[in-house]
Image (tube, rainbow, N blue to C red; front, side, top):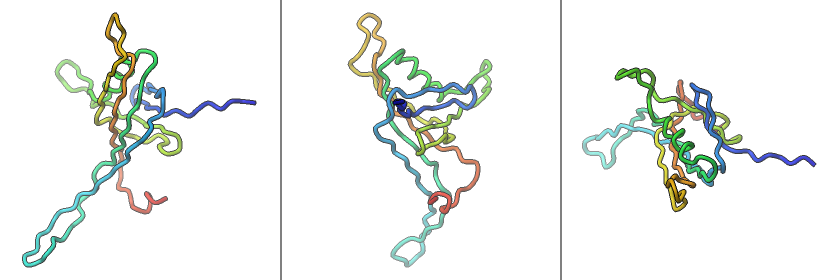
Length: 155
């Protein structure tokens, strides 16, 4: 009988094509989106009127844990996605976008990495103090190149 490999989440750098597979899938994911409205105050009215302005970015947040291998290097890979490339003092390119894969829920969604918060805790190499464990909070923002209708979201 053939054993099935577990599906693990991962990120792919869209420029270098490097991939960081998560050792363990996140236990929970927060997928949020907000909308901006202009508030119109009408004299004599008890409540304001609202005019739709635009949608805010869709944010996907989760925490990944690293326990194996060079933990610091894996965290640094995530953190590097927040930095641009420079040629001397001149900006060469913006930080790289990523594709986020998490099974059928997120089958390669284009995103920017907006925040990386590493928590190193209680497991450090006794000689070098390099971390042996890290829990890393990651916040992504979906990249969309056209307006999306509510009908497309409901599919």
